[in-house]
Image (cartoon, rainbow, N blue to C red; front, side):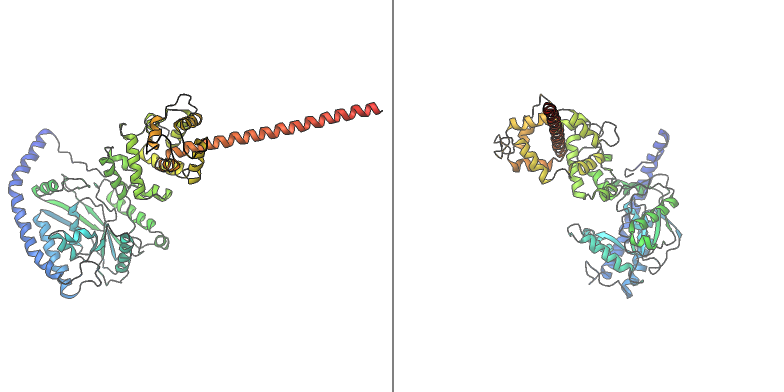
Length: 511
């Protein structure tokens, strides 16, 4: 859902016609529009500088009022519309925008382009949620300051909490603050569906007004999904005779009591309404999936590998973003030799430096949730978290170390290591020299407990093998104990029988 799909240009003659139009209009329109855009910026920047003069760079205490608000909402807003007109945008507005008192928050979707800023101009320059770094962008950073945005910092660990508190403060001010405009998807998509909405706009539990963005053009020159060529898209857009954008204000949505208690319910309902109006499906993929997708590409995996429905599995398994990112690196180490970003049992065994054995096949089958003979990244994350992480406790690691350390000298030799693995995996001929060397980081020829613990914590897949072996040992021990109990019971019965026989014989003798 995050890859742009280029519009079909038709036959070869149609393609030639497009490029001819592109060249002719490009030479005429691009210079003319560029000059107009620069002129508008030259007029707008000084006004924006005057409006923000003496205003705090971050953490606005009060909303702009008086002449500042007039310059923002009337003058700069009009110049903004002129700027987009210079770029060739034709804006069609449907519906009616309500006041801040009626709906303090505007939620806009789908978000697919840096051109989407036009909705801020049409909506009268409401506050937005933006990164702190964007305030320092030349020229456009000054324009952003006019919006008095709610700022998000990447370096502040309390940024998310502070952002939510600021949104709540503004949205519950009874119209004192302007509306807050939020793109709840949190990232750009190609408008083929609506991804999961982030909950920031819905946590305050106030009415929100959904706003739909549509670009009903024959040729898509505006979709920018993360790694899209921004300069190329801008050039293509400037070459078009005009670019239509439709902005539709839907009726405000008031949360129910249940939705106030559970913002995700409110977010999902609003998303469903917007998707229905747009005629689009919804998906459980999120902004974090987009980040994982980019990370997968950097690790030379197919980009769709990262689309794991992060929010859904993170809620169920209590996963953190950084942990999943590390798991992706581990998965990449295994899947680097695979095609399609899926792991077969051969690659799984090779990564663990162990042979394909019944025990390993059982472990692989636990990961392979759909039973197709391969493991994808989602299955790997779930498998490591559910199967291996809980088993990788300090107690298990200590017990496994004791099992290997047969002579109890607080170190494991290669012979001890190999002997136990042969027993655990049921393989008679097992070469574990490479695995042993990987654990023996100092190359001393002996594995210390700290080396063993460090390896076990960074390779949780082995934990399940260790615990399975321990469970088997406990099972055999219980079986032996039961057998001993039965045998001792049988022996007692035999003794009683013999005593009875002897007693009856003596009685007979006495008789």
